[in-house]
Amino acid sequence: MTPETWITLAMANFVASVAPGQNVALVGASTARAGSAGGLLAVLGILLAELSWSILALFMALGARGVDPALMLALQLASGSVLIVSGLKVLRAVPAEARHAADGPCSAIRIVANGVWIGAANPMALVFFLSLFPGFVAAGAETVVLSDLVLFYGSAVVASAAAGLMPYLVVSNALVRFGLARLLGYASGAALLVVGLSAMALGVL
Image (cartoon, rainbow, N blue to C red; front, side, top):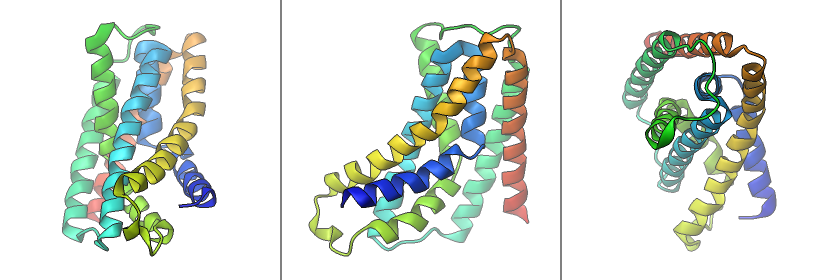
């Protein structure tokens, strides 16, 4: 566990995080509905999901276990369904104008939970981390305290994922300020719908 390893892992995950996808779409939708606070809360939820996937992948890498193809197919189909439903909900709930703050604790909790839900609906994140971690987990990892491993790899994943989503949060907030919240909401909902349909199609084909 060296600084070079941390930086390399963070850079690899940053490239994956900055690519447009369901997480980016959710950040846009949440910003359109609840302003910059909503976007930040959605990012928090997404980061919690990313951290969960990375910890699961780390344990599987340490145990030299792969992902069962049947389980992967089931996860992909379920995830596609979740994204389709979420996209339709966003499209139906596009507001006439953005609200610039989440409406109290319940709304904030709901936005974070939605971020976790959408972030978790991405089993390819598990495959991505499983493809990375074996090359980074040192042969002597069994001599390292498990909590230290989780902190080392988890911090790299969370920091890089946050860095990858921040530009989209800034752009989404700018669009809302320019009165384009409705357009942003429609675009984000449509993106979730497309990603969900694509996940379903790839699972079936």
